[in-house]
Structures are given as structure tokens and as C-alpha cells.
Length: 261
Image 1 (cartoon, rainbow, N blue to C red):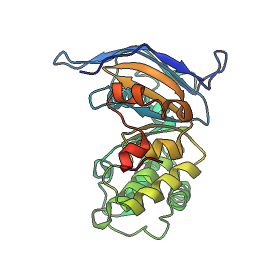
Image 2 (cartoon, one colour):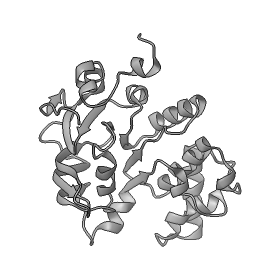
Image 3 (tube, rainbow, N blue to C red):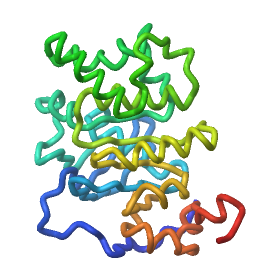
Image 4 (cartoon, rainbow, N blue to C red):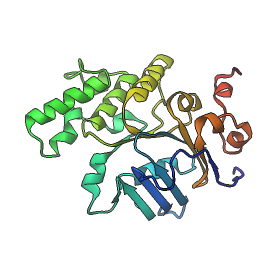
């Protein structure tokens, strides 16, 4: 068990009077077996921010992500664009928050890429023309517009991840939430994914152990441990604090690469 340090707010980029796109306030959650996963998490994310969510396994990162569109619901407040996440608002919230799972096979289940990307828009009651336009835009955004008739299960891991992102983009969300997006990718596919995410003009919350990706993609980093936020600040500040990172099971990017800059 790691030693929890006091909650650090380091150059937090969101002012107290800004209206956040995503708000979590004193969020608590325990699983049916009694395991406490979230202990009073509070977080504000402004429109346009790309925020890394980091910490050791079991810190509560994935549990937090599953609260953003109501898959899990604990005690406390979760709001998306000023809208509380509850049973009544779930359809609107899930259209605004696009959750991309670590394993793309959890999101790809149709015979063709086109059908996978069209699935969400079809269930929004859009016309066939509107659905087709959304699929075209989403696939173009991830550089996969030549893959309409391909079978998802024949694609590489990097290609599958791009299609999984396209299935979410087709819903035209305001927030993208990723769980370990670079996991399982070879170096070329990883670099391509980072470039893709960097260019997408959307608010992002990225749960990851890939500190080099954090450094390349995000301006802000939130460190979680044992269900709590223990530090929240600019990547350029926190990523160089070796003592802080090591206390919470993390490493600086140069240690990950095995080469110090």
C-alpha cells in the first residue's frame, strides 16, 4: 500500500468561478463486495482541457470513468455540461460523454466497420442520410475512411482502437474518456494514436500508466491513489516530481524509457 501524501493543487488551470464541462463533487463508491473504490473524489474539468488521470492499479481511475456516463453511480455529485447524471438524464449524458474502453473488442461487435460506427447514431433516431454523414465524418477524423466494409475482427490492434474511437465520435460527444488508450500498441501505432488524440478538438480525460503519452498529450495531470485525488496540476510541474510519482506507483517518462534525458 502506498503512502498517501496531502492533496496537492499545483498551478490548477481551472479558476474557481469557471463553469466546468465536467464536475465531480465528493464522489464515493463501494462495490457490492465492500471494496471502497472512491473516497470523496472532487474534480472540475473545463471545456477544451486534455487531462491525464494517473495512479497505480486499484487507485479508482476506471471506476471514476464509469461514473461519467452513469454505468456506475455512487454517492456524490456528477454533472456533465451542468446536467446532473441520473436516470432521467442518462440518454443526454451518454450522448455527451464518449467512453473508449481499453480493449476495443468490448466496443466492436458488428460484421463491418460501417455498421459498428453507425450503431450509436442509428439509435438516436437520425435519418439514414444523417447516419451516413456521421459515419463518414467519424472515420475521416481517425484516418480510417477506406475501412467501411472491413471486418473489425480482421484489423490490427491499432486499427481497432481507431475504429472504437470512431464509434464514439459518431455520437458527436463533448467529452472523450479513455481507459489505457495506448495499451497493447506497438511503437508506431502508439505514436499514431497520440498524434490523433492531440489533434482532436475535444475535451479529454485519459486514464493511463503511459507517462510519456501524458507528457506529449496533456497539459494537466490528476494523480489518484486509494480512491482519492492526491495531486492535481500542470503536467510540466508534476511529471518532474520523482518523489511524488514514486510515492504513488508511477515513474517519470525517462525512467519508463530506461534513458534519462
